[in-house]
Image (cartoon, rainbow, N blue to C red; front, side):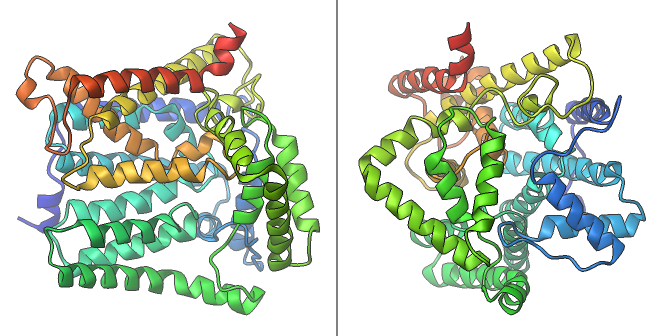
Length: 457
């Protein structure tokens, strides 16, 4: 039996049925983005599409240092290989990546939560998530970024421990860095936690593992950083931190539909200096002055009273592009179909939030395991988006981790009459206190997400 046969056994019949149904659902949503006319490009989609077309045409490509270069280049390579720049081509590739992501995540969850209830629930949530489906059609790097993240996790969670797997994970994380900057601060943090908490592995072995991983990651990103040093004088992949921090600190709306302000602020940023360095320094000075004027505590409380309403808002980056939304980009008419899609999206959002909070509340402090790493990633995102500019689409990268904890909750509900197996692994436990805390947090997160709808009602 080959390595791949061992790693990729046949899928259960119910999983195959879910995949087929979800693929049909995905294609149905895809058709809405092309009929009666192609959906308008929104935000950075126009930039990525321009980069890809320039790549395919063989003309010089000049990336903006605010965004990592890989996604635009990836799209350009796909256009060159296929011989067409039609959006359907890259959307087909991304749908394939979306499906691969779902199956990789399913295998990872199977390994970490040996419960058919949990694994099937997580897969179902992933496959039928309207936002994950929509982003497999949008010209944004989210789907490709998730592919690199899941591939890295699969290599270290599901494959036998080996130097090749560790190096492969490092390369995959490097490619993730070149696609989106989200993991840039998190990976060093997670490596540090691994060194300190993975006590069942000898210290020397931990150091070797970290060295191999870090070396492979560095080799992957160094060519881009050296290229930026030669071209722009900056030894970076990309950096939008000062711009996003300023916009995050000066946002006022409790939803992310204020597109005009963001465009105006982007124009101000480019006028703030002749190059990336001077613009970033100018905005750093503005940020320091603002915080000094407001005070640290006032700044913190203002952010706390705004950012999570924006992040968890029930109107997602997908639903706001439907007819009548703040980003209306789909060309179909408003009617029963769009109302059904919206209601489905709202209900799905509410279920994921509630069940993921429930599962998170079951997590024990020890022993340290991968579920703790997923919880740490969620906490990292919440900390990051407390300050920088935030939209609902920023949930996409930690949405699968929320679904993981939803799977834990589903397992508990399915086995509620068998207390001995209520928790799927030793990393989780269920007590009356935890259930009480979970109930309070579920109410809180739903009020945050649906505040605007409840106020209107």
